Image 1 (tube, helix red, strand yellow):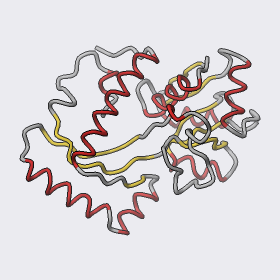
Image 2 (cartoon, rainbow, N blue to C red):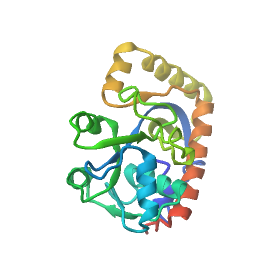
Image 3 (cartoon, rainbow, N blue to C red):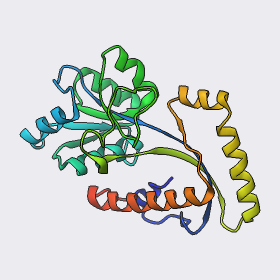
Image 4 (tube, helix red, strand yellow):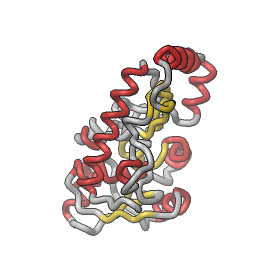
Length: 228
């Protein structure tokens, strides 16, 4: 996971040197969800409220370094907000406090968010991905809301130990790419809120390196203290 570089002071491996990227599988959009009854219908509403009352609003995460924390910090920094981060032990507790209004906003995965959005228990303001999510086509991206630097992909891919044969890398990449094109597999992934993202091994390698670099910058900007 690319966020490991900001969570641990000394990793027993180098993410870029010791791993050989093989294939990207897909990414799960995060939904910027607001508590109902707060009066936030758009990202602009949330930002205006936060800037009118510095330090008064808060956002939840499923814990330090979780996808929800990283997405929240990216949005906070991109929008220049003074808001409080409230880390929870897990997503269930965070979501419960969002629905009751104890938490103002929370980036959560699209699959568990979808039924709550449809029931009006949380308000979807934006998705964190560059493109609109297929499961929420009417919800704008965070970039469309004016904050392209807040985009965040919670992604999954396949890597192998460095030194693996380039022939094997190419073969595995082709097999995975073929699997991602099978309609039943794509449908199943999309039902889980995962958008398939086939790439060549070279494209995945660049994506991974860029993501690690972005995580390092985020760690500095958000002052995330690494663990020993």
